[in-house]
Amino acid sequence: MRRRCGFRHEKKLRATGVVRIAGVDEAGRGALAGPVVAAAVVLPERFRHRKLNDSKQLSPERRDEIYGELVANAEIAWSVGIVDHLEIDRINILRASHEAMRIALGALTVPPEHVLVDGLPVFPFPLPQTAIIDGDCYSLTIAAASVIAKVTRDRIMRDFCAQFPEYCFDQHKGYSTELHLSRLHEFGPCPIHRRSFEPVAQPLLALQEIS
Image (tube, rainbow, N blue to C red; front, side, top):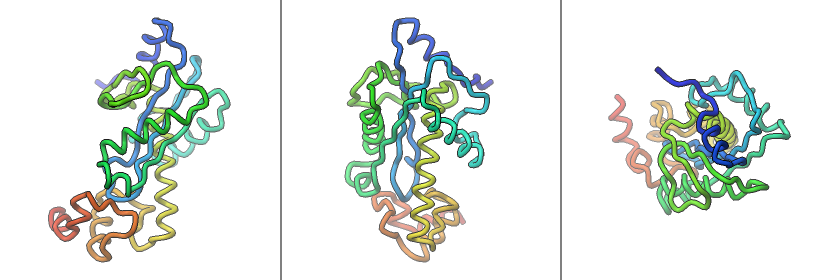
């Protein structure tokens, strides 16, 4: 049974005297095109939100609604880090995801004392961290970061759709869907595709695999 998303991890840290706790999550790690985007969020201790959850479990409309509420709340500190497709190809997607997280944390006006990271530990890392597998399902702080990262990246990909309409980035956001692979096969890679990803290097093979 899935545990309810809440403040269990945050409360444990506060019991040790830690006050300012950030959650960090990324979006776009598995996409074939566009940037990877990370968000860092610090929620107030008494924060409550009945609809906030892991961004993957929310509809696009609900994510946009919650995103608007989070960024409009003056008590919430948040920032994003963006690493583009060129850097992803240069250093690989894992390192790029970690770099996006470090950028997001560095952009916070006041550094947190501790960071809750979705997934596995990040090294090197500038602050004390607790890595939580599926953290966006258990920690509201990470869930808030997941929503901000996802909505930010989706908007970037919709902007790219205006530049490269034949790829329909507004529909699949650069992920490996049948539509995306068919357009990749038909038109070849565009300037924002990640050349180090095998389906981009071998679009015909990737298309055959999903047939």
